[in-house]
Image (cartoon, rainbow, N blue to C red; front, side, top):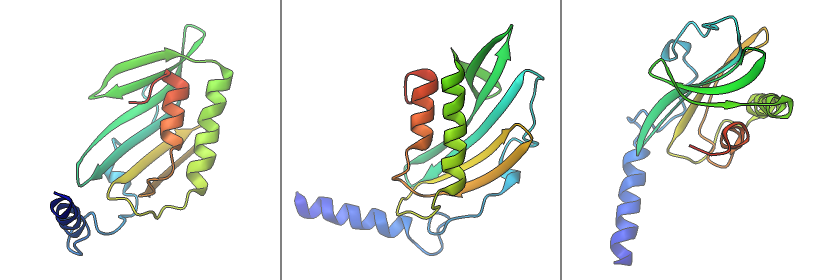
Length: 152
């Protein structure tokens, strides 16, 4: 049983690290892969994180938005052009977004992960794109937990 598990693990690593595989090397951020232009869709939005991931076990994408509605700040998750999760947020939670951005900008993008994470971020007057495969960084998970009380 243990030999079978070791064999399957080695096989998976071989498949995912194949030099002809798109997963074998970190692909530079490609803004054309995002729902561009990465612009605010409504005047009440003040931050957008376009997030996508792909790897040996699947992939996906969605947007995390910060916006104001009737004088109250909200965080929302948009998938297929629909808000699927929404939460009221306070100033401390908004500050956690800026901590996330600072960490993301200084992150060592290389890791030893078979999953590649891509971010397009727009806030204030700044827009940037980055890609990494660092499995040890949990900044985006922390942000989601802080804003929504859950990690999804």
